[in-house]
Structure formats: structure tokens, C-alpha cells
Length: 373
Picture 1 (spheres, rainbow, N blue to C red):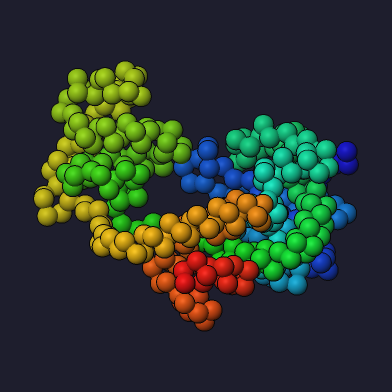
Picture 2 (cartoon, helix red, strand yellow):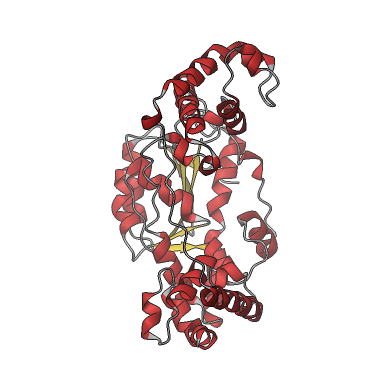
């Protein structure tokens, strides 16, 4: 195998950006370090044309700015597989936006593929075996091993061939416009801004009393500080299950820490004082300042609406089978719920249904109106 280029200087990156600007299509992927460091970051960018594959080291260059015009140019196709996380990460770390997207995972879903992972697709269509043992690797380490470099390059090397196959099939099925709309929607994804108390983003927080939430908030803040101090992902400091149990038990001494599953004596010795201090801080919060989980007003039961939703789900099951698609790919639950609520009676009224995509209105609109009528 030809030696894979790894670009580590601004000059090399600028030269590559100029070369890629004349391409009509490039395949892109990235590797990050979310499992190994407190603040996850993009650690490697892979780019393949039809003729070459190049790796870019974001930890060595001063930034990826030279790629901004290229990635933003909709006339140059950018091929990703499962672009969601990659697009969010590029925007977060480098303020880069991607236009001209072609996502091979979305395409696989719209083609009714049973397995939509890249390794599965390349094995099925090209007899290519991807070694996925580096999926959990620490991509922030330097130097990268030869095996890691080869692994990274394989993730984009075959995407052009996969696009050629999928584009032909989507076109023959009349679903290319579906895919193009899905790609355009995907281009706008961003990581959410995480404001407010940490405990309100905690799974299961809605079932906890306010005092438990206050204690949990102090425990979560301690975990964040410890993760930052050690530069470790917070789940490697202490698990969420253990924090929730601590918030509910509210131990007052180290004896109270013992017996919590997943909190062995070594962690009690290491973190016991800090955990008890956090619990104490949570207990000291005044009642009026305790976190409060926002409650959505429960929608009044509407038997007719429930009947419409049931009929829509029944129809979807049959329609999805006819299209050879997963039901949620054809139309998701949120869109069905919105349809049942709005109960549109005309084609124009379908435009008022939040979450209903244009391709779904065109392809499914008549059937949806018939079910609701």
C-alpha cells in the first residue's frame, strides 16, 4: 500500500485546499478523542479524492481555516458516512460548515439496507473488510501508529464507489430527491448550547425530588471539576448511576458511602471526602434556590386524536413494508403525532404540520389525508 500522507503544517494544508478546490467530489471523515479526554476534540481529518487519500493533523496545524471555502461550496460534493457527529464537531471546534453533503448512511436507510454501518456496507458490496479495533483508540496520542493511519484512511478511501452505487439505486427508485432533502437538513445540525444546571440534563432527573436534584447538582459539578483537573472523561471519574444513588441516599459519613454498587473501597478512599462535601453542599442549598425540573403541561387526552394516531401508525407499518423501509425512516413518530394533532384535510394544510418533510408530503401526502379523512 502506498504511504499515506499526513499533513502537519499550515503550508501543506493551504496547498491541499487549493488542490481540492478543483475537485467535484471529496470524501471526508474525522477521528476524535471523546473516550480519553475531558474536553473532546477533533484529532484527525481524513480526505479522499478518487485518486488519493490524505490525513490532516488538526493538533499540529494552527487551524482548518483554509478548508472553509471548500467545505462551504455546494458545487463540490462532500461525502460522509453518518455525518451528524462529524458536522457538529467541525462546527464546534473550527466553525466550519459543510454544504453539498452526501451521506452514505442516510442513503442506506432510504434504500432499506438492513445494516447501515460502513463496515457492513463495504463488506456487502465490495468485499472490503474494515478493521474497527481502533474505533475506541486515543486519537490524541502522537505519533499515530502505522495501523491507526491505515485504519483512518480506509474510512474514506471507498466512499466514492459507494456513492456511485447508491446514487444509481436512489435515482432508479425515485428517492434521490428524498435523500437530497435529508442531506440539506443534516447540514444544519449543531451541538446544543448547554446552559443551566447540570442536573437538568441528567437522565432520570425528572423523577427526582428537588432536594435530590440539589445534591445531584453539587455532585455533578464536583465530577466536572475532577474530570477537567485530570483531563479524563467524566464517566471515567464516577458513573452516573453512582451519583444518582448518592443524591438519593445523601450519606453523612464514609460508612454511608459503603455498599453503593460501583463505588468500591478504593474510590471511597480516593473521593470519599469530596463526595461527602458535595452532598453537604447540596443539603445546604435553601429550598427556594433548589433546581427545579421544568414540567411540560400535560396535553389533555383527546380520544379522537388518539384514534387518528393509532390509525396512522397502523398505516405506517403497512406502508413501510411496501417501501421496504424501516417505519421510522419512512416517517417518524413525532411527525405522526403532529399529523394527528393538526388533522389536516387538504394538501395545503400539510404544510402546517411541524416535522413533515417535503418529500413525505409529495410521496405520502395523499395516503395521509385519506387516513385522516
